Image 1 (tube, one colour):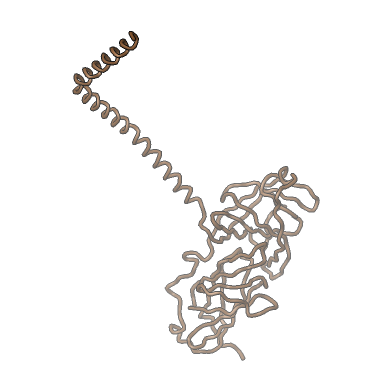
Image 2 (tube, rainbow, N blue to C red):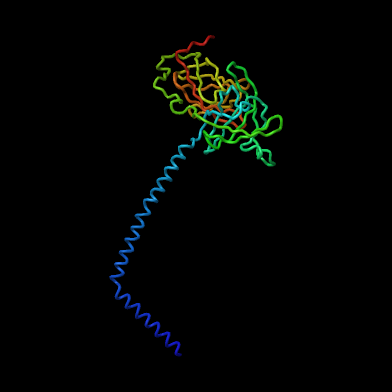
Length: 317
C-alpha cells in the first residue's frame, strides 16, 4: 500500500513539473523552433547545391552516353585487326556491314578465304573451353573490281563498342585458337540525310518533256559495303508519265526491294536478282532498300539509285 501511494505521488509531481515547464517555456519554444527552422534551412541550402551538381553531372553523363550510341540502322564500317593474316576480303575495301538493332551492334565481315573456321568474342583460352558459344561461318560471294567473284567465309561479329579494340579469337584449319584484337570504326549511315539524295536538281518526266516509250539510262548506286552493284545502263519504261526501271543486281541473293514503303519481289527465278521498280525522278539519289540472304540471317540494306537523265537514249528494238 505504501509503495502504491509513493508511486502516485511521483506521477502527480511529474505531471505538475511538466505543466510548469510547458507554461513557462512557450516563448523559449518558439525561439527554439525558429532557430531549428533556420538550422534546417541552412542545412538545406548547403545540401541543395551538391544535389544540383550531382544531378547536373548525371544529366551530362547521360547526354554523353546517348551521343556515343548509334541509332538503330545499317552502316558501312571499317573493320581492322592486329594481323595481316586476319582481315576482311580485299573486295570489301576493309569494311563490313554494321547492323544496330535495339541498341545491339553486330558487324558482318567477309574474310579473305575459307581458312578461318570459327571466331569467338573473347579470349582463346575461353574459346577452347567446353560449352563456349562459337561464331559459325557463312558462305559469302565477294566481287572484285575486275568482276571476278570468289566464295569466302563470313561472320556476324558482336560489337561491344565503336572505336576501341576488343578481343576476338579465331581457330583455323590447324585446330589451334589464337588471340586477336579487332576494332570497328567510322560507321557511315547508308542513305541518310544528304546521302538520301534529296536534291533541288532532281527532274521529273514533265521537267524533261519525255514521251512515253522505252529507254536506257545510266544508274549509279551507293550504299552497303561496296560489294554489290547494279547493271548500268538500266532499262527504263515511261508509260502514262510514270517511270519504271529494271534493276539487275550483281548477285542472286536479293529477295525483295522496298521503294517508297512498297515491297517489290524479283521478276526472275534464275540468275542475278532482277526487279522492276518505280522511279519518281531523275538526277538525284533515290533511296531504296534491298534485302539480302547472303549472310547468316537476312539483312535489309539501304542504298541510293541515281538515274542520269543526260544519258537517256531510246531503247533499240
